[in-house]
Length: 290
Image 1 (cartoon, rainbow, N blue to C red):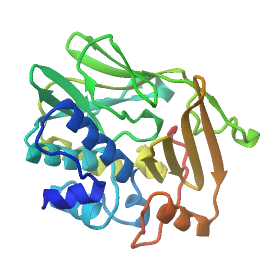
Image 2 (cartoon, rainbow, N blue to C red):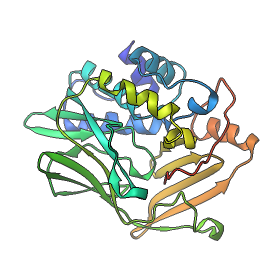
Image 3 (spheres, rainbow, N blue to C red):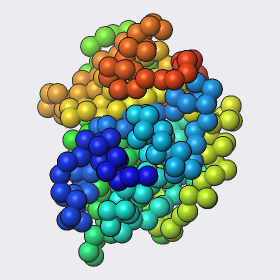
């Protein structure tokens, strides 16, 4: 594996010498605008590999994306290789439908320490929940970013990541009641502790998430990619494009239903993905908002 190949993949040409917040932010933003958050392997009859070499081959050499266990592990390797003090943490994702956090540790997130300050770095949540900048590990402080206001809070050693969202304008009325649209202005995202984790601790959940009928990842095919203005998402046959804050405190959200031929074109032109095997789009009944 070659760090220069990773930098080329994300289009990063800036300084690598200063291990500061500015460089960390720059790396994160290049990463999320080049590498999609996606689970398309599952719906092409392929596995979501957990080994770092396999992830590097998929994401860097084959120009694909991946889910959090993959893209955040790749980011962990890149930041550690650069010299950042980086730690793997485990998260429990908030499930809106049942109003609680997952009982299993299903999300991989990173902590980066710079001097006396610690930051949460996550390139693998995607959609309109994706942070664009590292979040300083401070409880109860609003941290405004382009997508929304993020807030970390700590209770008895457990940290929670929440967001305060804008209103959203959907010009196409037929999609106003779409199950893809987030309805809550205040949104819980996930919880985590500061206990260091190893990638081996995610092996069983990596298998479960891509095999269980109860997993949202087997229920839905998805791909999302951040842009300088917002985010594109493809879920099943539905393409959504969000522009953050296109008017004062309002996001513009446009949705379109694609046919089979359009999906291949959209993957290539918007997400820069060319699949080697045939995708079978799926939009099951598990909750997955954009």
